[in-house]
Image (cartoon, rainbow, N blue to C red; front, side):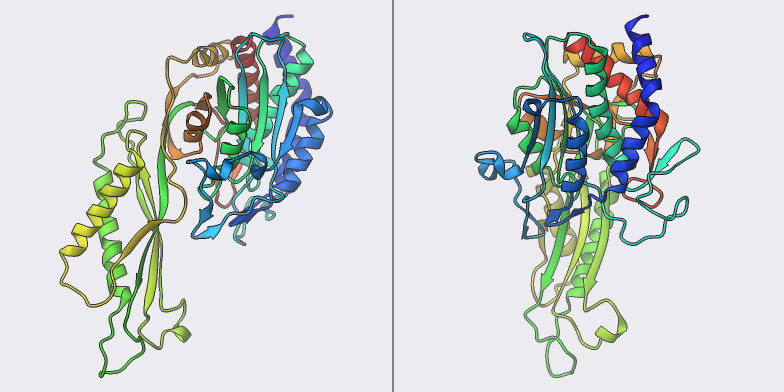
Length: 433
């Protein structure tokens, strides 16, 4: 029996166990809840599961603040919307399959935190944490983003151990915390903990495409705080933040259209476009009962996307200058100025070095499996940028197929998860041999 046949037989034999384990993880609620998060129960479950085939010396469960000097690292971002992030009881998990020495190393990287369900009603299965399967799709918050992809890395590690093929290089599987809501500090901690890994597969949902580029971006807040007294009446000047924020919203609408004209990198379809998405405009309360006076402050939240070739400095300057010019075109209004600031870290785009030998191993794996191989840009922001900025690790994004991440009826296609395990195993067998 060939190695490829042994791998296929192993995946078939373990199919139900793989899916049951992912469903268990989905049922464990590991929401990212700024400024903290609830990843610990999921990490402890995964660590307990991995301990059946990874000895204690190769199983590392640590907290972000266990990394010496991490809060002084230039990439560490300590706040979200001005609140200090909390990392106590939010461990990172890394499992290692040691090689014999002298070979290249590989990591399978994913995150445990998921977005909340915000009390929305789900349709296919009422329980948003069910992990149940219908028509080849597993439903539940975090199935696609990204518990299935994270679990695939750990199953690939188990498969490599059980197949018993000797490797020279070390292979790692890791589950980090605080990726959602523009986090990334868990990834930074993992990179600083093991800075010399040669390559990583980041299993964000790519539809099994090989993501060699990702976009960047950040959440912004436009705010106005007026010096006027607020209230009502004809005897006082009442500058109104709502008027300024409405004009900011119109400027952002124009900026979104402007982004459609940006140069599209060659890894993307020519029809690709980045966006500016306005999420919220708030001032003077949220209902009629609160609306009896002119407010004195307000804010607007929005998301700005960038391509990898745009630096944070360039993106900030371009947006700020555009909004300033647009507001200058309106008649002057009394009161305070509009303040623009990011509320999360700036997530830089990432472009993979296409000369890296790991991409050759990945191409070979796809060929052996008869899978369509596509190297392309991924149209969303990830923490891929942190890999090379904190370590010598290059990274590509390969994750399963599915739909509705962060939304109602999020699901992952189960067969694509099994294919992802196969890709990971064959890549390691070639790259780390």
